[in-house]
Length: 309
Image (cartoon, rainbow, N blue to C red):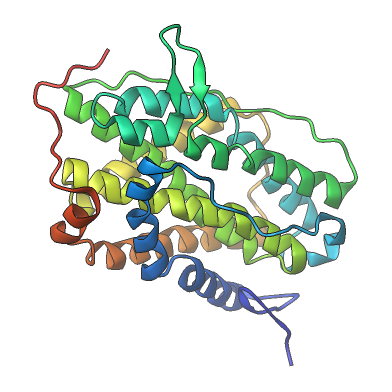
């Protein structure tokens, strides 16, 4: 009889269908309608009383390479390095998002990037930044614990591109780019969790829960503030996902040969995880009726003739 973990049955040499079942279990567990809706409904509370989502206690010393399942350990280490680098520099990400949303919705901007004084110096760190900035260090700790090697950072830069068009288009495009990063993070971390178990899996689950929380908040806020349909969100999100992939690929010199069957199975598994997250969002999105969003946020509308600096 196979043991169980938070992804279901734990197969130490899983085939594709067994990994797919583990991905489905993780999505049902961590992206349930109740969890996603609660994350959106939490925003007014965050506006009134900003607070960080607590993490469970981590047993880093108990993490061992044997907890990697169904994946070459060196590839798993590469993924940890990549995720650690992508998670930085958080201050740049939060400042960019704050600047885009400040005039449209100051409270949401504060939640993301905090408060700055008249000299553009930060006086309060945003909740989103506080939660996101703990992800990179944890991935580094996991890498060091598993490999017993020193972590050498290769952080990504913030694109900070100027989105063309009127103010609503610029704010919407930026919010969709942020949704895309949360969406891709959720799918990527779920896939990684399907290939590990024990304390290693539990540690990555803490990061995943932050990303799910942020994805739901950005999604619900964008639906309410800009009244985008699901298919508008996915269309914009897919475009931003391609831009994000090309941007990060051009930045990184580390590549991997893609001829082995194992590599192609990993690609197929990742695509499946991305698609399953989208399907779950689609089903959940149908429950986000305007009345529910207005009940959460109120009848607030984007200021007309909004001008961004």
